[in-house]
Image (tube, rainbow, N blue to C red):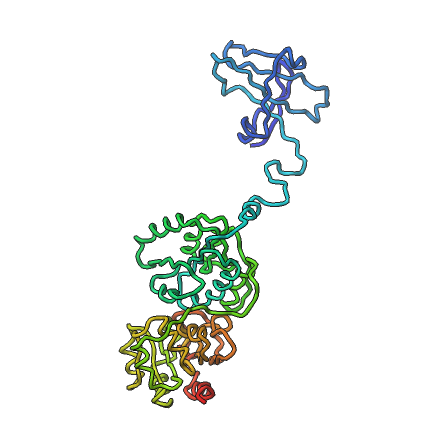
Length: 441
């Protein structure tokens, strides 16, 4: 509704007969002045004709041209025994626009940045990285640099309960907070626990909606996330770190650089224990074993059981050992063809110790591939739907085999290309053998 000026018959005053409610008192732009006829001789009082209602104080009309009428302020001086007349016209004084927003902070430091700078010491840090196995391994160098930057701080890691055993001996972590992803009833107690922990700094490296909710549930004054976070999780951060398109390890290290951590060698502090007796007895006869991990989470990442079986037949039989999950032990048994099958017999730390003793690890794009790269073992990885420059084995001693199919990388769990899985089928057994042989010397 627009503003319209009209002239009253009794006083010849200009008043606003129609205006939006945002200009009505007590809006900050409209000033309320208590006028008195003796203290303000330029104003006089008019009573309503009916004897009831408020006394409206009018100001004498200024001697200006009708082309530029000046609206005046409507002033109500109410007696205690009278009720305000809601139908009486009101008048306001329009604010003088100086080009600045009166409600905006004019200081050089925003409120949020000023609040962040008040945190002088960081004593409790939380790393939010629940999954998956490869991503948790990629975040270990960032945790190591945070420990160097804050040597006296208490560092906790929120991780899936199925992966918590990987961080049990990590020397840079003080506390592991397990997250039961598939048990929704345990989420609320987890959020309450995060609130009571009183963290000073929270780093969300997952970048999803559930991790963002966990981050803001802590109530930490500093909540850091990545610029490529998804599912609206950026709404829960008050510090966003710009990350380029690069390997996941380097992306996470951008957070360490943002916090002032010194640059240094990339380390994966797993705190490997000595192998247990059962594992030692199974691999004691092997000299620099060759580990083969033929499984993966995505169906499009699988090279094929027939090709892995052919590779096992053409490798030295006294050096091959197969690994995998317990749920896939029967399928791996057919690929092993009498070779040792450790699927489901090792924990994550024992698997890392096994890979550390191997000469080479042949695998699909999977979590154990990153585990082998983290312990410094050469990896021969077969890639198809994913990009090795983003999630490949980290380091310089590894070999990545992939075909030059136009649709690769597609980042899809189910192949829609015709013929299907062409990116994986074009990688031959001879190419894998040629990549493995230099590490067998």
